[in-house]
Image 1: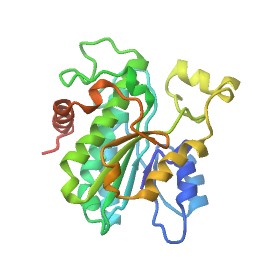
Image 2: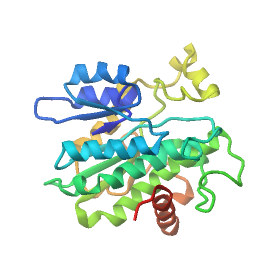
Image 3: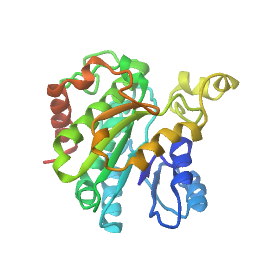
Image 4: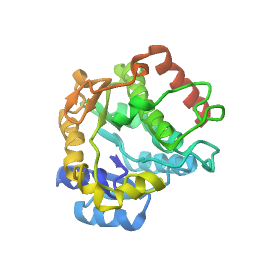
Length: 270
């Protein structure tokens, strides 16, 4: 299962992983874009807007109804967003779309992941931007702190790593392995909801540095091929290299637990 699969590295990963022996579920925000990828891959396509948590709940129910187990979940949906206005759920957009929505989806699919015969793998797409993030479990929505789009984005990418380590700690005995990965600076629709970053990615300047979606997807695909390998549990990869550059907060065991607890409270999980 791949979220954020309607374009960019999600679509590239879907096209590479598709095959007659693979049951692929793709999730995207745009039905029109997603239809092109499902036509190429023969996958099931489902739409959801992660800016609406009710969409995530409905998505999880539909997936649970369609499957008995999930071997691989690629939490790839997300981007960089202006921190205001808040979402319909009253959350800062980077926090909700990049962390809270995949946190909710993954938790709701826990039983399907735990049912995988050879163990399951959860991959969270993070970013080197985690280095400029700072997680305050008492102010996840930046109500007290000033949120620039770069700081809010970086914080959400740090939260992806912390969530990865929360899964590694809490679900190890369920046969569920989790890794986080920075796929590289990819020339795609990343930043489409941010004026500054989106402007850069829509100009010829994007050709000077970013890699292609296919090159970015390669880092995710490598992890998929490793499957539920305990050696990668809780590991953050910078593209293909394990233990990429991380914020000092990324290994804080208390913060890992605090983020999980507060996130669960915010989305109404027991």
